[in-house]
Amino acid sequence: MLSYFASIVAVCIAASIAQSADVPAQRSIVTGPLNDALEVGPGIVLNCEASGPNERVQWFEFTQSATGNLISENDFLLPGNPNVDRYTIDHPADSTTYNLGISPTVLSDGGQYECVDISDSGVPGYAEIILLDGPPVCTTNIPDTGYVREDQYYTIECTFGYRGNVAPKMKWSGPDPENWGPWLQTTTTTNTSVFTGVAMNMTRFFAGFTFSLLANFTEEGFNTSPHSATNVPTWNFTYSTAELFVQWAPQRMYRTPEQDTYEPGQLIECLSDSNPSASYYWRNLDTLQVYNTSVLELTDDWIGTWRMQCNAANVIDDVTYTNDYFFVLVVNAPTTTPVPTTPTTTEPPPSEAPCDDLSGRWTATSPTFVDMCLDINNVNGRIVGIFRNATDPYFIEIRGRVAPNKFNQIGFTGVWPVNIGTLAFGGICRKCYGTEVLQITGVSRRVTDNPSCSDAGPRYTFPDYAFRRTGPPCVGMLEENNVKF
Image (cartoon, one colour):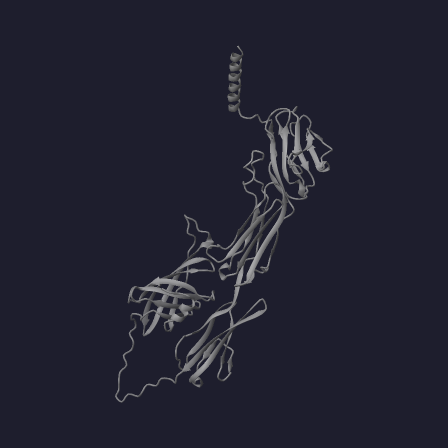
């Protein structure tokens, strides 16, 4: 008989358990508090709405104790809580709301809060409240003007304190660290503070960028526990440097045209890779005569062999930086043509003819100054070279093609580091009355225009440039800029 009773009880218990498993938990708190984050000082209100007017609603805070401290019973604040002077309960007559107010807030208010109806077994409402001791404090040695020097070491450090169970996220943005130079991102988070920093050796490819820090909250930390609301606090903070203007001392100096010997009447210009643009002077090291110009005009007085120095200088942050370029200048006497003993006729050059080998130095002066060095493999038609225009005092690497042993068509591309965009050039070369003219037109796109899969962004067309040959093959300059086939 007892065995029969035990069987019946066991079946009833099992049925009860199975039935309760299919019934969702009763929620007597119909509107619970929401997660929030705020800086210390302003007050905050945590909402709580029970299912009926006759419930017993209690508030607990878990900021001082892991087991929780009781704050209130319905609309009665318990005097034993250390923060009772800053608490209020808003419970209009005959209403079902018991909203907890905290004012003013202090850093130690950060933590978890619970609103529970103890008159039944319903699910309480929980919220995570994060108190911040203020906006992040950021320091940097990047000047407010944004003018920085290439190859100098710069840092940005931001830190702030908080109290609560969820730390804000700190995310840096700026130049692409994979493609545009070395930089280091570090973030350290403790239970009460967050530190984040960026350190970089400045490169010219950072020009036009800013380093920015976004501090905010994400779903992480709020949706992993049943004892929390699921909303994400809207607090956020952004720190940004000024737009970077990268400067550098003169480097990679050269002369144009670059020849072994010269004749009176020629001009020699001294140039360098520098930003801001450098000023120049020439010095004859044999006579110690100084010429305060970047362009040296050769006269008959220069016939002979001379040791020459070109000095380039620019000013960055009130500091003058210099560099020197040395070479041996050989100026020959003008070539004289002997008087023929018999009359001869000179055949004028044709109005149009194919260009010679396109390898060498080319310069255009209109509509702006553009300088270019090309090296062409006449077996396969491949081109390598360097290119710069008046707005960028440094060269970019270019690569392209010509038809093997034919020099009337040319095409090449490059990547422009300032705007981080791509350029494509096409050109036609003809010898007009004995003078080679290389006509070049360019088209570019910029990734800074935020292209998408469906829209490649606007195209920028470069004006037509008429290049003239200004020097022999410039393999030395290509090697100096590490440009090879």
